Length: 551
Image: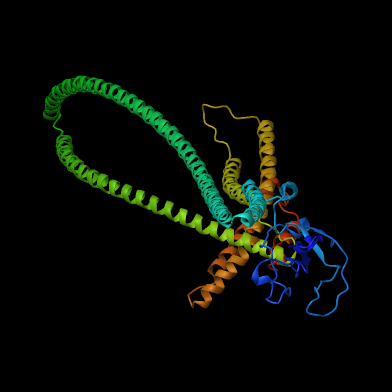
């Protein structure tokens, strides 16, 4: 018989060092294993709580129902644990009350609420990661609650608890499989999106290529239309040229017919004239014979015969020369064609040479521009750049000066002719009246004054151009003379002597003009001043010899 005292606290599970276990002491039991043969109570093995997944923060413990007893170490004494140990109320060793279910429901709601808050705070890279995180949290909570329910059921019926545990495991496996399938599906979806983006990019590139090809096709079509229009225009031009050629051919044919008619008319006239000539020649011959026989003029007859024979031979040689001229003309035409071919070939070679020279000059120009840029960048100095306009202007001015040299030559010849006309006296014959002396003198003075002015202008121009050419050609002639002398050729100073002779001829022409004008006017005439002569010949050192002595 059990004793009437309340010892239910002995069955409460204590919470010692994080481990839920029953009290070490048990009440007396009728089982033989719990009581010795002599009636002494023996403590049974500690009864441990099945592993629970409920977090420790949701565990509920209670104080010991009664205070500890003072006992002695004896075989008949109950050994009590420390009174400060706490008894575990939830989860309980024997969950047979409704309050444990309510507590478990509250724990589940609290854990779900916390999981919801954590889910809101968690921000994954994608929505799929957020969903998987939420499922993982909720699955952990459901697994914990389910485990506790299985534990509570297993206390009453282990088989029912085992079945529920098996169902829970299958359910967890199914959820894990669903999660894995969702992850695989998400990976496939991401891969498909990447492929779609790649395909869209390829389609966009293909669209751009199509647009570029369409644009090029439009350009080709426009070029084709342009070529078609040009071909049509060329065809019309050719048709017009053919019509013009036909018209010209008709005109030439008409001119040929007109020429044939005119030639026939002229041939008839020539035949008629030849007939009349023969008649008159025979009549003249008869008359001449009669006159010769009557007057006995033998030399005249011989002269006539000689003239007739000379005419005969002359006609023969004229025909011979005509045939020779025809052969020479044919040869000349052949040589002309050959010369034309050679000229065309030479022209083509000249054009090719000019093109190659232009390319080389362009290369040289590019090189000079690069060197100029290099020096400008390295030395930081402003290097004079070749001014194309100034060079062209200087070349054009040189051409104009050379043209003025030709004009000066013509002016010199014209002045000399006017001088000769003025020096030669006027010729009078019996049909013309002699001019008045005053009029003749006045005209002579005017002509002399004009000649003097023209001579001064020509002398200045001639001196100026001679000095300019001498200064331009002096270095060139000196270099050529040195080159010829270095090559051991004959007469290396020929060009230098020619340059000196040019200046000498200029001075002699000016001096001769001065003497002629001085003789005409009766006083000395100076065409150049002393300073200009010194400036002209200051480099040669021959000023004193070439300056005219003072009269």
